[in-house]
Image (cartoon, rainbow, N blue to C red; front, side):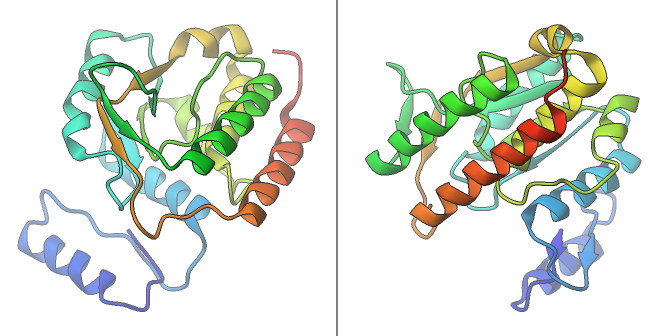
Length: 211
């Protein structure tokens, strides 16, 4: 996926596709549309090629790709799971490091998100997620998201709107990753947090129906 980048991202992706078209697909957006819309289009493009699972992963690899096999294994062994979200939980035996301000802002936001969705979800914003290909997935990603900042929350809200909160509580799985590290340059500023709060209010107003 090249979201209208002005650097050599498109060239690199194109060369990978030319080298091995069976393994690498390439979606080139002529202009930058933002992460939320780029992810939406990318998921739909991937779903057209897959009858199993699709997902998205932050390119900074704060969540290393070594986590992917275990996450796929959950979907393989738990057919009732439709959404699998990586979660950054500091537990003994896991290597999770986040800058303190980002962690505490994140925990406050996560509490508000959990209250808004009516689900005991711990971490919606970790950038590693997988979905089982289904008709509901197509419906959820069919139209652009209202939110540019926390579209991950809106994805869950759309699933709840279509399937009900009780169903989503059983079909969403949070996988505690074994490794996660803040990457230099991936900073969250205070104004970004305020924008996220505004987006959460928009999502709550648009999707808060009995589930």
